[in-house]
Image (cartoon, rainbow, N blue to C red):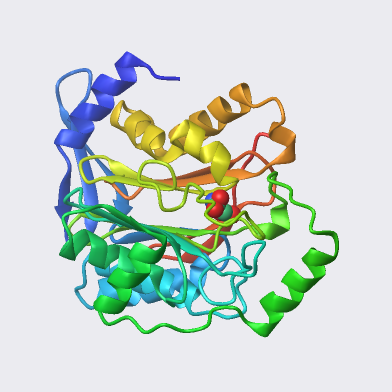
Amino acid sequence: MFSRRKFIGQSALGSAAAFLGGVSLNSCNDANGREITKEINTLPVVISTWDFGAKANEVAWGVLGSGGNALDAVEEGVKLIEADEENQSVGIGGLPDRDGRVALDACIMDSEGNAGSVCALEHILHPISVARAVMEKTPHVMLVGEGALEFAVAQGFQKQNLLTEKAKVKWEEWKVEAKYQPIINVELHDTIGMLAVDQQGNISGACTTSGLAFKMRGRVGDSPIIGAGLYVDNEVGGAAATGLGEIVLKSLGSFLIVELMRMGQSPQEACEEAVSRIVEKNKNYKDFQVGFIAVNKSGETGAFSVQKGFNYAVKTTKQNVVLDANSIV
Ligand code: ASP
């Protein structure tokens, strides 16, 4: 829970942060007024949802390592997963809506607070790049459906079929019963949300998904919604979500986590509080999964989920690990 004392303490830490040779040093005064310095983390840092985030983190790391910025890193990182036909929850190969259409959602946010988003975009391999084009080339934040597709084609993105044979078979199997269950099944989702803090301490994030499998046509979840599936504030940190989008949409979990960090919570504490709020407000919390990841300006990371089974990947100069998130259930 928010503590004013902690807020004052950590704000003081934050304002004194300095980045020296990739090492983040925070300094503050002890009770006797002496300055103490503490190593928080080594930048850059990349964190992604799910175990497949590890290979995406490697791509992002390659961008950061060659002097690239956090925005390029997160875009290139998640593009790897969008292009992976074996992944059935992001990009090509994603499970379609109940009419057999692969409709993709994505959003991106940079360290300047700019944001771009596409919803229910069909036929385009890299919705994250279209979201970035919305951010950089239009006065808008979000384009949806046909409009998003028209814009993408005008920008030179090629139309292609995104429904793979494997995804089609699963859809055909689903159609036998065609049971429409808005409650998420743990196998039917897995958005990639990625947050990167680059060498300069600048933060960006990306989030991309094919959404809930066999969803109603036009259904949009949390992933392309700024504040729900993703939020970044370069003064504070970033957060991203995965899981049942309807629940995240009603809690604006990513925005909440960034605000909690602004008030002094660590990324871990903020993720835990966001999940606790969801659990408090949803009696059926045992029936769905929601997971969050977060990073702060110092490169500290955190993650938490409603159910067991949520994992996430963290890449630092020392390691590229997949970690199991702690959970409420
Ligand atoms: N959050 C995504 C959605 O609801 C799905 C997921 O992450 O599993 O569209």
